[in-house]
Amino acid sequence: MSEIRLFDEGDLPAVAGLFQRRLRKQKAPASPSLQAYLKTIFLDRREADDPIASKVHVRADGRVSGFLGVLPMPMEFNGEPLRAAVCGTFMVDGHDDDPFAGARLLRDVLSGPQDLSFSETSNDISTGMWRKMRAIAPPSYCLEWLRVLRPAAFGLEMAAGRLGALRVLRPLAISVDALSGRRGEGQSWSRYRPTADKADGFSDTDASEAEFIALVPELLAPFELRPRWSSVQLEEMLVHSRRKALHGERVLRIVRARTGKAVGAFLYYGDRGRVGRVVQIMALPGLEGIVIDRLLKNAYERDMAALRGRVQPALLDAMLGRKFAFVHASSTVLHSRRPELLKTVAAGHGFFNGLAGEGWTRLIGDRFD
Amino acid sequence: MSEATRTDIRTFIIDNFLFGDESQPLPDDLSLIDNDLVDSTGILELVSFIEEHFEVKIEDADIVPANLDTIGKIVAFIDRKRVH
Image 1 (cartoon, rainbow over the protein chains, first blue to last red):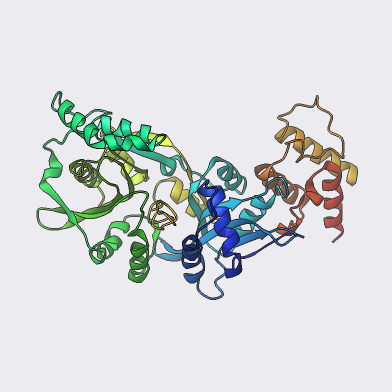
Image 2 (cartoon, rainbow over the protein chains, first blue to last red):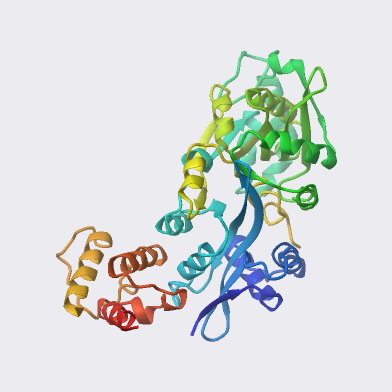
């Protein structure tokens, strides 16, 4: 008889293999470093006897055929402490042998003791399953945004996705963009032009992890439903976030007013000529547009082709009018037995995606050779 | 009781998985999985319906083809659950 049980160390080879096949779509066997990282992230961080934990589906013959990775996250709702389960890594093998394995895994995890469960990387199939469990997928958290900065470099990056050798043309594409950018003025969907604006009254500078951690509570405070990370937890998350070889160099900056007062921060990854991946944009209420403008200027000065990231409702208003394009790639799904929590998220008053998710882990964007 | 259960399950499957199309034969022993009528998403919908409509508690371990792959198996499963 097949069963759902807690994930343990003996499952690491099987789960790493699943990750490699199902999520990375690679035929090569999973590396020891991937196994080690799965242990670090899903087992070593787990407190003894904590029931909010990752689960595996084991077939009748003893083979592990499914995994739902769970990262516990402390949260608060209008001051009330809550526990959330971040359920991003969800994968099942051998659908023909046991077509209900995924459904059982998800049902088991969602029936756990946490106040709230969510995933920010849910594909269409798993979103359908979450919805059947009465989860919500608010559109204002599900959209991916894209801001093209340099059209030739961006076009080359898209083409290089299919034919990697084209990347040798990067310097040429950046030069073409520099020349063609001299004509015309104002912003457009296909091009960013640095212009004098209100954001020039602010500055952004590289931030140490400690500076960023000190700022986070103030930036989270406006949200009714928000993470309640300790400094130690945030420190650990930022250590994990240092390396994302597939996404490029990490850029962590704080935006300040002339007085020196910090008004926001951003965290993204990217190298010259590439499409940067923004994990987090945080701003004091009313200053979202300033922080976004500083982010765009910074990425432009670093010769990035474009930036992309996940929408948060608090940022949407400021993104309108700044030539951002929006597409749907994966969904943020949330499940709770407490309707008031879901209502708060649906109204856009929750802080989710990026650091409040799996965006800080090396599972997204790093290499495990 | 089984006949009423059978009718309710059949109606649920026609309404939710066949979108009201009653022209297809739906014998008691037709595999819902092999005929692509129920997948991982559909099974959660079916389980929620059974729990709410028939007021039985379904454990995760119950969610296997042996209990839920055909109308006949579903009816027998609900009957067993009600006895317990």
